[in-house]
Each structure stands twice: as C-alpha cells, then as structure tokens.
Image (cartoon, rainbow, N blue to C red; front, side):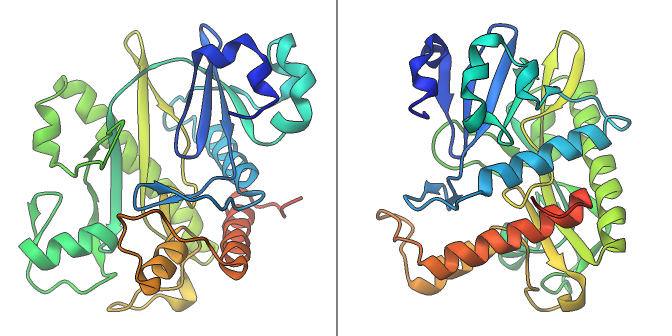
Length: 294
C-alpha cells in the first residue's frame, strides 16, 4: 500500500492486487493503479514509472465511452468527488485512481479472442481446440477467426487462472448471467476492434470482468488496457508471425529470451526494457483515447 494512504483507517479494509490497490469505503471502492508490472503470475520488483496513470486513463475513457453497450462501476476519477478524507492525498491519487461502485464480483475472466495467439495458439497446437472448441486443422499463428471466440477462465485469488469452456462456465452460474457476460464481452470487443482498426491497430484479444449489484450486472475493474489486451500494429500484421505489439507481450518476450525459468524470483528488468514498455503503453493510450499523453 502507498505509505501516505496507509495513514488512513481505510487501509484496514484494503487489499493489494498484482497491479491495483483497492480500498473499501463502505458502499464504494477506491481503486488505485500502481506502476507495478506482472508477467507469468509474478510481480516484478522494477516498476514502470507512469504506467499506472496510463492504465487508469484508458480504463476511465473506455468506461465513459462504452456505457451505451453495458453499464459499468465508475463513479468518478476526480479527486474532488472522493470522500473528504482523501483530498489531502490528491498528489498521489490524481490520474491513477477511480471511485467505483462496490459489486459482487463474478469470479471469471471474460476473454474474447479475435485472432489465434498466445495461450490459444499453444492450446490449438497441442489439442486442435481453443477454449475447448474444436477448430479446423489448418490455422496459422495470428490468423483471424471467422467470428470472435468467447473463452472464459477462472479468476484465481492465488496461483494460475484456468482456461475453461463456456459450457463449463454454465455449470457455475445462472444461464442468463452467463449469456449476458458473454454477449456483452463480444459486443465490447467488436466495438473496440472496429474503432482501433481504423486507427491502424489490431485488437487481437482482450478480457473483461463483471460484477453485480442486486440483479444489475456491471462492467468492472478495467478494460482494454495493454495489461489485459493484445494490440498489434496493423502495418506489421501478417498471418504466421507474431506482430509488433503495444502491450505486455514485449516484456513476456524479453523474459522468455532471457532464459528465466518462471519459477525462481523474476530477474530485474533492464532500463531499456522499462523505457520501451512505457513507450508502447503511451502509444496505445494515445490511440485509444484520441489524445496525446500529458
């Protein structure tokens, strides 16, 4: 937790995720996005300075521009709208925090894949399936699906998330809820894919999370950030390759090439990797929001 916020009583009702610190304010939550970066379920000691503000800026923009598709939990990202006891922490909270509605989290990550890459490509090479769905035997890496696929995963509090099929997901919840989060996830993906393609970016895949207040289901957490999405440069896109990306894949690729075993403590990130990661995050932020980073 940030040392300044730890002075408040709310720290007793807080929890730290891999990237976000969440403070329980009663009926609302304060979400603070740090500069931490994680990969392969490990949080690295080296932060990416400014990354938290970039992620928060994207999430706020997406929440504000997609509420016509599905309502979300955002109340405000303006510190002056936060409870008075938080105002003295404006310098830290400004630009990296959100006041949101508190929901009952639906414990699944709603992943939408428009192209075959990453863990989906690895699954397909082994079993001929993606998300448990049997696909033709002639797909190539990065190839576009005829229609985007909904491939959920469990949301583990510790350890690894587990990819499951939509049919398995139905076993954990009411069919109407499963259909709602599936359909809204696909609508959000299609909306973003169309907009980004016009800007020269391919949204290969992404994930969404949902929560409920009573019978209402809301989009929560964050959306369409380079931490949770795979963005490719359209000019570099070619089937059978791994295109240049504007996301965390750059860090993953470096770690794989470094020979790290993914079990021992993560190696330090060289300054040039930190700088290049931040540059890519800033680029996709400017594209998504349509505004230059401050």
